[in-house]
Length: 478
Image (tube, rainbow, N blue to C red; front, side, top):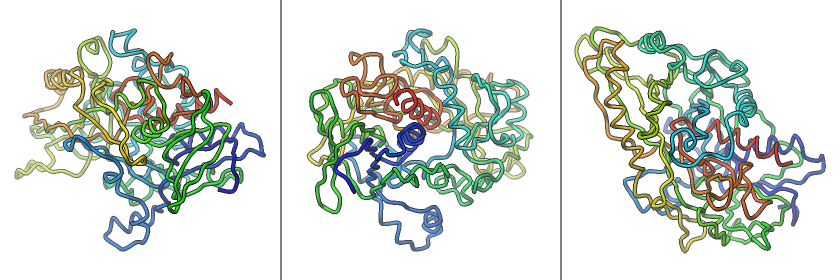
């Protein structure tokens, strides 16, 4: 830390922080002073690949395992994320569908949950901007409104994908994805190896390979190993950020502060700081996902050019959402075989992903260690569970265009790696923590970024939307 005070202090270097900074720096003064505090360290892609191969790398010990950074009061529920520079951009799988317009007004349309204080049309230009920055591969026709083409062509369908697309049109499309379909901007083309956690050919967009130039900007000072534990909140202003580095305590003042850690740690920081908003930490959760395996009669399912080849929206939108959760189908193109002679490829798999609602019995609390939040999770909403039963009743009819022998369902996954809620967005502090620009309702110079702000938990992957929200927040406020 070179100075005692900055124009902007940002906590974290993941999607939320980086896209916020990208937009802020476009509008900020050439003399602006920005400090970025990153708890972890850079673990370069090439070194991650070494580790994946079983080779020694000194970088492997720099960042703690995520499970060691919080107290989990429900061992049956996993919470998946990555520590270090770039945050979870290093472990995400690159799935980037937009939300549907209806996702932002669930109460108005279906009497469920709360409406977001922002509409699809507000985010539309920022969705486009993120898609350009990430060089998204996607289809010409989409189930959600889109005014411009995707930067890269879509991935190719498998046999089953082609049949479903012919039956359902733009309700079954190649998945929009940050896994490049052709080589671009220093990234290779997706090799469909399904090792997306650490892409072996660097096809997946990450903060490290983004070429956005945020952390190379001379106005930005990036400090690694800075463990932020609280803010000084005084007279409705966030005045200072408090952190530990090399076992020493530091305090830095700022005109504006932006929290860009994940939904667990943003809430923990606010609670440690004395934030008394009753919704801070409340409603932590994510979607539910489960695998459906479809056994086919004399149909070879081959082809496809990436892991999640396609998205199916046949169970997503509609009046059923008044009673049961929406479901997004993900076509799973991982290498798999049917273990029967002569039927090796007579099989298809889909990941069924269901929306959820914030529940008060799922929450984040503090512990005696200010750096270590506790997570209390009793389970998803009854609304989400009903969505699973609704899906199982409808899928045989939806897949009737295929020669289906039988369908088998696995138990829900322990995590979708999408940590949502805990600092939800709302029109007033009577319903949430931050406003439509992700500014804290009480502390108006404090931004709380990321998917913790989501008012409801749609079935679509959150990263594109949380990144667009960061652009929107910085653009509308400065």
